[in-house]
Amino acid sequence: MKPRILLTNDDGVSSGGLWAAYTALSEIADVTVVAPSTQQSAVGRSISIFEPIRLHKVVINGFDAYAVDGKPTDAVIIGLYALKLQPDLVVSGINIGENLSFESIMTSGTVGAALEAANQGTPAVAFSLEVSDQGMKFDDPRSAMIHGEEIGHVVADVCTRILDSGFPKGADVLNVNIPSTIRGGYEVTRLAHKLFHTGVEERFDPRGRPYYWINGPLIDDAEEGTDVHAVRQGRISLTPVTLDCTAPGAFDEIRKQFCP
Image (tube, rainbow, N blue to C red; front, side, top):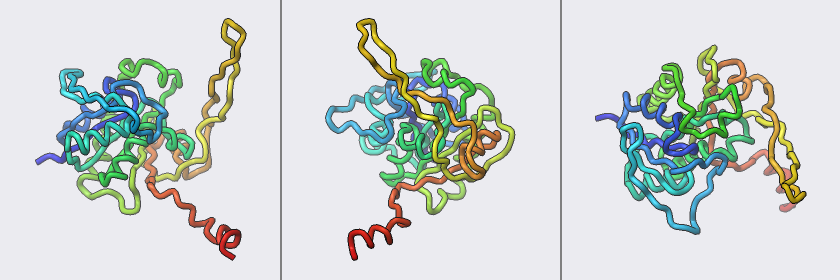
């Protein structure tokens, strides 16, 4: 029997990236798509606890899928507990735009879905694709079709290795970032500190009242060994991520301050 994969994302159930992943993964597994019905980028691990969640069975590109009126984490929870899919692996992506650095993975709905799956006891991989034009992140995700067998091959290859050999011990999620132009192989990386030079742009509406856009250009590069550096060099970044956010390096100093 083929292994079972629950496929989700944060760009929405009709995203070209999601269906590129579906095409690649269908060669190696029985894949069920359970994804947000609309664009949900940058919602992190938000969960809908103050409103009901609607589930719709839909047909996209000729294939059955489930559209969830909620967040990526909601989609994972619905897939695991309402649909009772019992997947061997949860895959989130392919996200249109890279998810690199502490800064990005803390807000990413793509990584958030994978973290939620891991939190519920199912191993998970998040896939994101670097885009040469940052404006693509804000286009209709249905138009962001991912072309090229190389991208699908990476998704299928990573998942095949994990399904065959088991999930890497010591990691809860594997965060995979694929460069827009692949010029090298895999590199195991750590998270860089930042992905953007954060800024705020003030504008004024027709009545003269201010409003704000959070913006800022991408960081050109980061130190060697980081996910940002690997992708900028054209290599596929593999970053193991844990759910445990404890900072044991601070234990001694906190004990001195609070437990003399």
